[in-house]
Length: 102
Image 1 (cartoon, one colour):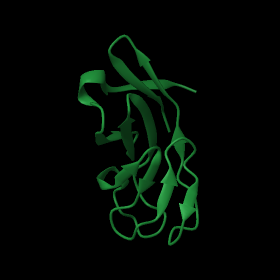
Image 2 (cartoon, one colour):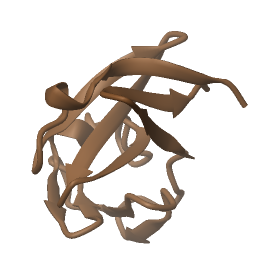
Image 3 (tube, helix red, strand yellow):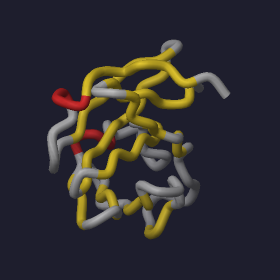
């Protein structure tokens, strides 16, 4: 596993979500109450950008059709999505945010 810098902690303020691109893959990075989570940014139902969704705690709601995903594991929690998204480990080194590269 190789961690890659995706930004600084200041770029991921509490309550925000941001899409980053690593190795051609879109990944959503979410700050929920000061904890950072990273998952594939593409909904497995019809490809919605998950970083534009809404969080209820660590549950992410897709902006297009309301599928729900667990930010910690990437598990799909409700239809219409039937498959999970990949979750990535996040670490903070100094003021840099790193995720394990896809």
